[in-house]
Image 1: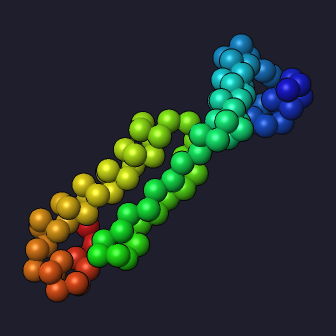
Image 2 (image 1 turned 120 degrees about the vertical axis):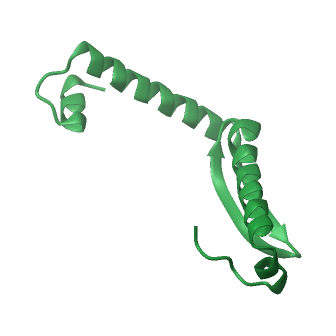
Length: 99
């Protein structure tokens, strides 16, 4: 990446040491993501309830357990919390009020 490209991307006239380091960190992150993609470390999940898909998300790169699985578990935990607070609505199939 050229200095001119950094100036244009960040909208600055002068590239400081801190900005240069930030740009390098961003590029390193891009390399890590691209390596995960090339290595097939791209994940997603589908959550079903009673045979019906209720949530899905794809495009997690890198760490299955740290990113994808934790996101799926967080959704299930949130769903369980809602059902605990709204048991009658959940039993009748109604959606609880937005929180």
